[in-house]
Image (cartoon, rainbow, N blue to C red):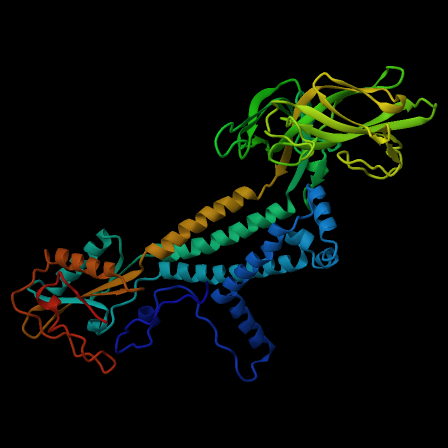
Length: 586
């Protein structure tokens, strides 16, 4: 961020405040707290500097992560409205407060949006000046060598018989060969390397910005729909066939992609032995799909958990499955008034399922009154032999012993009242539960068995079952942008952590004795053994063109008062006689 900077490095005695020597980062300096009367403009400038600082950006990221927690713990307004309604019914006391705090739509709430926008501004205010400064660094030459190279953290020196021009030319060529940006000014050679560190920092910032843009784009231009499809039936991605739809500001029912598919079959496989008996091992929906308006050109495909079917800009996810018992209902005249499958919803891991069969067109009862029937009960894929003590239970999720446990109601289903009803629940306010001999009439049926209803209401035959699958059709255009941003952020972070920014200077001067004193010094952004190793390698290679003499070099110059009294000088440095082991100062 904008206030990231290096620890102060030793500077030249003549230029103690030189930013070229002290700073190896392009991060802007952080402003101090304003004092005195600076006016509105001064305060605004100070607030802007604080907003674009690292600590504020980190604080906003932390607040954003905290703000997202309620969205993960509390059901959100969307396709799964049943789950939200059930949660509100179970927490009636706190629901009004949550509604005022916009907890049921966290990601579109005003407070979440405020944090999001502030983080956008903070990142933008950091990226723009930092990028501009980095471009300036790339266009400029490496900083000139300080006058006193002995004060650099890594230093080596030796006497050579080569002239200074030869040394500078050899050093310039060698540094360029090793990937440094080098510049010779006649008296020394300055070189710099490790710009990928700042590139990584900028890439990380840009990636975070792209990640936020992708998430925001997905929030305002995304939508999802859900649909339960029975085996053998199809689905067309239109408004009339969607069970639930949740859109956004820029994505509505008129923006749905044109496609459809048919569910040819569903394969479910479970663990049959061991401690994980009943655990799902395979859920596969075998489909044939089409795109556009031509439903005659079908393409076979499969949809599995976490392996969606991608059609155009939408993805079809498999999110659940269950069973739909098939029943035939006849009236007192032995006329068929209902026949077909009815989806039951699973209640547990063994696929014990509950549902309601509603017969709206039953007709007249034995007394000539218009009536309707409803059957409510459980479908058990593998029914227990006896459940008088436990109630209806299933022992295994696969249909090894499918049974239907059911009771009956007669009366008015109130489907003509105009009020919306849940197809999986029974509104029994105007219904009467059928009884036989004073007890509730109920039946436990195997496939093919028939139940004669009491009070001459006819009969119900359990014909078998079908499987169904639920799908979510998702349209999230910003996901790819967010994914690319996340990957790029990781790459940028790796570059900023492992690439070391460093500078090397080479100076050759002719002493009074006619010999050339070659000085090599290095400065790294952080404490790293790599700087000393690199400088030692450079010194060894440079001796091919500027070989060392047997005599030790003269002192390169006394350290000033700010230097450590115990810090060795060029004269007593081990590197004076052995430039392959440069001195690393504390």
